[in-house]
Length: 217
Picture 1: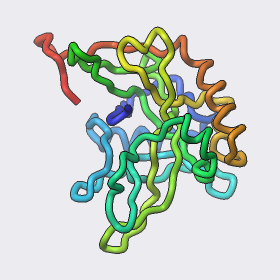
Picture 2: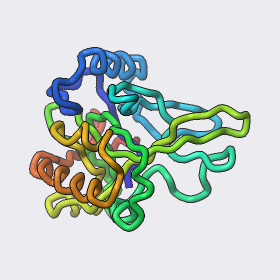
Picture 3: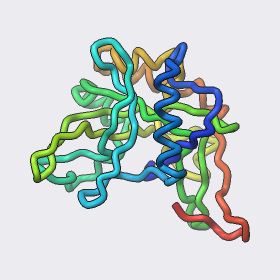
């Protein structure tokens, strides 16, 4: 599963939406710089870290802060909700009614049994988008948030030896469809086909510190 990812303000080759709006890219750079290189993790009830996502607001794509994981009855859900399997969305497309794109420059997974962390990405610090489904959620004190869950799929063969699942990456030509098209079984099927077009570009690199020891995220 994807439980942490990175957003480096030095990102290159933005691959989020066609003719990416400079205001969106600058907003992401500013947020990432203010985040001081911290790894993005699921939102907690005590430390309410909100992460940037891209959403369709009345036909205009904007950046919005969001809670990673679902809130149910005023509290973080008791079931795993930071990730959603693509297979589940194919079986129950009703969950596709509200969607987002999560900007990232890499995500992190541990290779077992070696327990070595790897960073996955498109190489060269490229900015890319991960598919997500969203819903509104309320905390116990009555504050409302947009909550998101990253959509996961089986990893292609050349990555499966490190981790058997990966986020559904949304290539630029499909981004507006993912955000604004009707949410049905056909949409998730098309998203999986679109994501496969990026498979050959995805790499997994072991993460080590200057002393050669494994770096934990």
